[in-house]
Length: 163
Image (cartoon, one colour):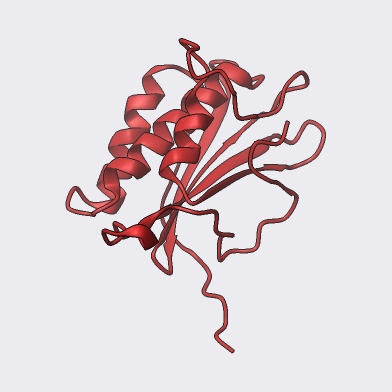
């Protein structure tokens, strides 16, 4: 039986909870993975969407820090954003395709194999993560993206689309 390989962290940074941090997050992901990585654009987009969600939907104040971590293993890129959490809401997949805002997790669900939320306990924040295929799928019917559990153990994970 093949042992599960722990993800290798390729980059981690704490960013101020301000809008300017979104472009910094994209730049860091590109630097960590390299511009020639086949999935760098999806990973940068995921970081951007997850960080934007943290800014808009958590209790983060401008003096708070939001953590961004990117790890790779077994053909998967893990993008994780840790924020202070919220006392009033939890991440959920919006079902309104015509809405002008609030489509961040819908985008995440389209570009990733899987995503979820880890609540760290009352007042301890949460981490929203996604797993992106590190190699483009081959053409054909078998290339359809389907859910896949990440290789790394994920404690206290709320599955896709949960509220």
